[in-house]
Amino acid sequence: GMKKGNILKRNLIAESERVLERDIRDEGRPFSNVSLTIIPKGKNKAAIEAKQTKGKLLSVRFIKFIGNTKTKDKILRRQFDIYEGDRFSQTKLDRAKSTLNGLNYIKSAQMKVSPVKGSSQVDINVEIIEESTAMISLQGSYDKQSGIIFSAQYNDGNFLGYGNHLELDFERALRGNQ
Image (cartoon, rainbow, N blue to C red; front, top):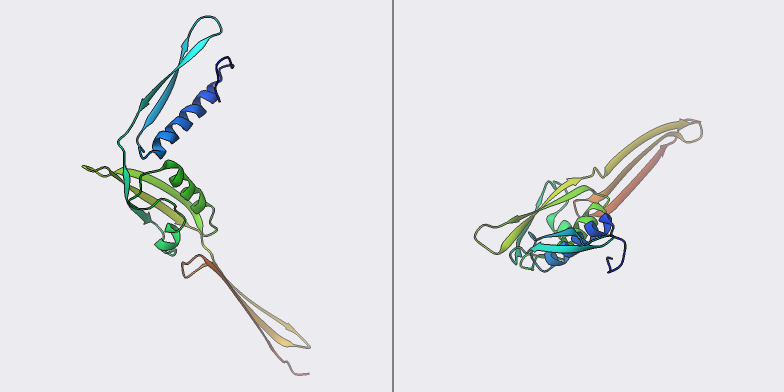
């Protein structure tokens, strides 16, 4: 972090702004901003002025999932540790986004926080793009000893939209004439 007497680095200032904003947003103020300004104070010295705009204290009204055609809402919802009625928390929202994006059946998850007019609440819209998780494979072959051999495989990493993995294999040999 930044301490008195340290060399001033712009990347540390930007990181400090992000940390301060996150702290305020975790208090339930999602539309808050922090701005740090460098003020020269003579040769090789500077001060940092912090300005913050604290948004209104807000809670979550709805969490809505958009675009999930296969995965059930309740399966996506269990990835969150922020719920409807809770005070807004940017850290919890970011953690849920990271968890959703780590699921093998989710291609991407993007979140949009929207204020609800005339209230002290926000809606969280989660836009989901799902991965194709089902695969069917059919194979056939022939050899003199076994005759015709038929095999089929079905593999789904999000079976029935519940996030469970299912794999089925079937193989059948039809004896040939010897």
